[in-house]
Length: 342
Image (tube, rainbow, N blue to C red; front, side, top):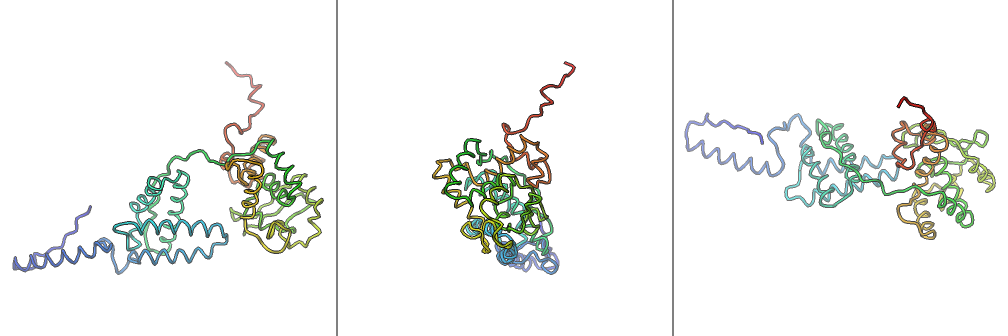
């Protein structure tokens, strides 16, 4: 609470002064209920832009996002924010009201009322921070209100890596039923390329001589060109299925999981994985992305975490460590034979 004074002692008559005070009180009360604040200067501050208009501009800006999955994800979170605003008794009217209190209440509503996980709540916090950055860039607000809001503890991730027996079972099943999807699974396991990136790889991005695959910056999550090694198993499989007989501009995993020039959505992998998982009777903790977790684990244990980091195109080993659970962490043989002083 802050005190704002309006001096009326220039009005000589007490009765006129009281009349003016009553009029002023009624006028200010209406303004305050509409979201007005005496601390914001209307003339030189864009904070009085309607919040609904600012959110519409943000929604239009999402159309420029190159990745469909990002547009869908951010659009979904925006709809949840609008749902929260719509159920408030006194919803914020102006964009300057997008402050720490408002964001904190929104995150509490998600975490406590809707009972989302700590991970989901923290993801929304990150999204709110990016929304605030959008507002700051347009001078609607002067500072990021999310900076003061802390992360909450997260539960262990539900997704689990596959066992060696499960990998063998998967390979046997797909070799008979769906060789192209088997190639996709092997790419995810051996190259650790993200599903969205996989749908953008063309045959021309593969070098058989170097045994590498190139990921262009425009499709990469970190916005940088990347090149990762292709396992002998993958190269042999590509040659056996006659992949390189197709034109170089064909997508490896195009529409309907075919080698064709029609680009597909990354959803093709998830949809096909659900069918396979049902046949093999695996739990929902085993996802298509589990292949990447498994590949990082197996490569780190076999060749070291640094090699796994580079193959996964992580900027730091701490990121690679997030994919390794305690039982998956590599143990150095040197620690077993070290002769200490005790």
